[in-house]
Image 1 (cartoon, rainbow, N blue to C red):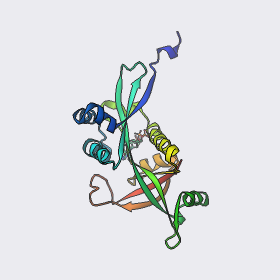
Image 2 (image 1 turned 45 degrees about the vertical axis):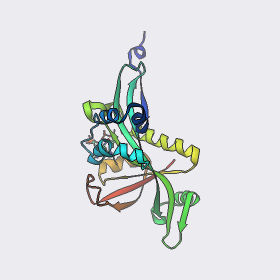
Image 3 (image 1 turned 180 degrees about the horizontal axis):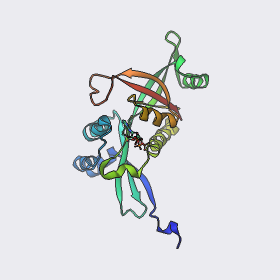
Image 4 (image 1 turned 90 degrees about the vertical axis):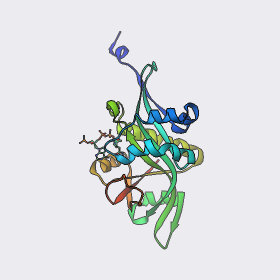
Length: 210
Ligand SMILES: CC(C)(COP(=O)(O)OP(=O)(O)OC[C@H]1O[C@@H](n2cnc3c(N)ncnc32)[C@H](O)[C@@H]1OP(=O)(O)O)[C@@H](O)C(=O)NCCC(=O)NCCS
């Protein structure tokens, strides 16, 4: 026997919240979601508990739960989630380099009057680890973001598209996290009146090319 035989093998399993609601019913789904907490980000915390099921039902966005699971299926923990919505972005020519401009042009439209590209891009609307019972230590942010990007890639493999985007509060830790994962800052937008769980007055907007 060697060391690798003693280490318990694990993997991540992603489940669409819509499937959980369909198969287990809304009450059971809510019970699973009540196990999620994210004290560092109230928006991420509240969205899953209060809005995710309804948004999923209406088709406004789809939420994917990420579970950590042992290969023998004996243990399973909710470690995080992300939410994807179908959107478009508007990007100023001056915010991007010429390679990015070429790709934006190829996949979208250019307005010569405003010098802006408009291109369809799925939005990673929410992304967060589960801080209940230390479950956040079972997954890294990089891995969670990678799973979200892979999901977008999978959809785009079927329907086309090159871009993905997200918005975040202007906090150094978050800026560093997205920038080291190859997201590019392209703008900021003022908060809507109903976005009361978000700190500050605006959100930074980032895109990545897949
Ligand atoms: C963003 C996230 C996925 C990154 O995961 P990660 O790369 O594994 O990083 P960690 O969780 O170890 O956090 C790294 C640092 O960022 C800080 N941080 C994370 N989210 C933060 C937030 N929303 N506000 C302020 N600081 C935050 C952590 O406190 C930690 O600080 P430290 O280095 O001083 O200990 C994860 O931190 C998370 O789930 N955060 C809460 C939800 C969130 O803010 N999501 C982003 C929505 S745009």
